[in-house]
Amino acid sequence: MTASDYEEPFGWWGWHWQPPQPLSVVQLLDARSFDTETLALVWALLARRASVIVGAEPPLAGKTTTLTALLDFLPADTQPTYLHGHYETFEFAADPATEPRRVYMLANEMSDHLAIYFWGARVGRLFSLLPAGYAFGSTIHAETVEDVLDILAAPPLNVPDRLMPGLNLVINLVLRPRGGRTIRRCSAVHLLLPGDEQHGVRAIPLTAWQPESDTQAHHYTQPAAQAALAQWTGLEPAAFAAEHAARTAYLRALQAADEREIAEVRQLLAAFTPAAKSNDAE
Image 1 (spheres, rainbow, N blue to C red):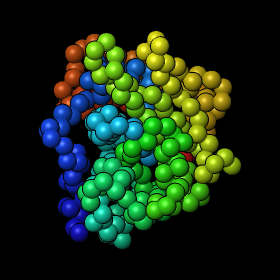
Image 2 (image 1 turned 120 degrees about the horizontal axis):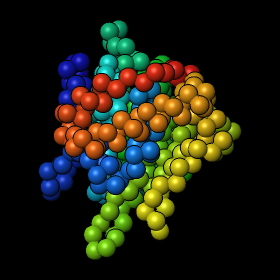
Image 3 (image 1 turned 135 degrees about the horizontal axis):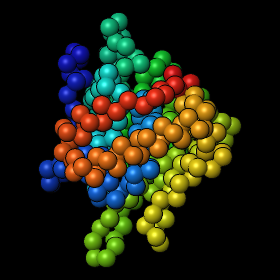
Image 4 (image 1 turned 90 degrees about the horizontal axis):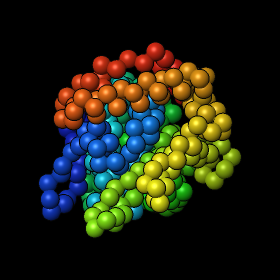
């Protein structure tokens, strides 16, 4: 494969009867898939090139739509690198011109449903690249963070515990009937750090959806979560809280200003400049 082969999406939306309808992050807010605070938190982590998996059990829960929108949170100098499912050879990793800390590998879905999806030993190979500075985004059919980790650790993926902390962020979605219609919600966001728990990581809950009130519980305000965020970002809790507040306000302003189109939102997100950008994980 040539460098240009990795620049274009490969079977990104899978095979569906209906054409995809990409959304901007502001449209995710409009749909109430996320609340502003949760989305701003995800932004702060992806701005530091967090590797992320978006998981949901049922089809059409919005996994790819969500991941695609969230990619606009990545740094402006990111080099998206679209992987080629069962055909992937990872030739880009052998190219001396490749800069791992700019590359963001994109696997449309980790499953064996189609040859265009990413599965088997290739998933292990992807994780083996992460210690060199690569990062990635993908989706998976999994309802909880525990399900995500179990799938990655089990055959035929066999991701070893020592590489599992290369995955930094797990976002789970749910699809639920409500009032005669179907709603999509972010059910949980977890930050992963190296640890002695199952699969070699600690999964720190940052937010969780409360179905009764249709709101997000903000666990990131708890001391344990604040300490985990400080460890991963390299910022003191007060400094990270200030940055998070600024990102939250910025997203609210975009929504209030009726800025929704993908290209416009992408440009406005790129114009945001936080005061602090430290990340001990890099």
